[in-house]
Image 1 (cartoon, one colour):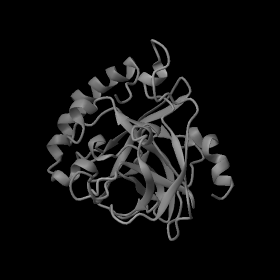
Image 2: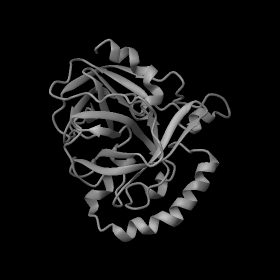
Image 3: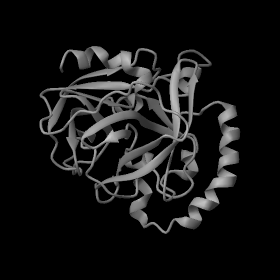
Length: 266
């Protein structure tokens, strides 16, 4: 199951849900397309998707989202890659889901991430802590500016831009404005929460884990962090105006993990 954040955050979600849900729903007359991020969006080109060869002849789908942080390095949620451990032929694409631009040659999962429970009680596994991975590509992605790592962590009320995919239907790339609502360090795991505007929301069902939120501009993108799941996912996933406690890993907080790969110019 997806990350369950500490009980204090659940109390916060009750307050926010009661005060904010009705307001968002009243102002949102969005179509079904808004369920995964608002409007058609081709900005922040470093945001892309990961797909794999399922061996069944099915059309390409976005199994996870990922963001280019160096010409040959993308970052995503560790659990999203690991849940498809038998998959072969991982590749990275940009824009709408379709032709991929590079193949994955290496997968590096954060050493503190526990894909499986270790012992009877494993909070790191239960809370999906350190849910970070970077992937090395077989060739540089040309024509796309990699996203920079920020010089500081996210702050309450920061304006960001979220990218996701309408994965179960049109495979179109979507985007929406959003706000950082909470930023905490959970026993060494720097996470934050994002609220999309206009009643939109990211969908775990669409493979949007790993989807980024950006600061900066499309010409100078800065990766603030990426989506790993919502603790309310069981009843709010893809439901407009009700997505709360969206867990995001901080790109700044994990800068040391992928610094060597970036510095190597990979």
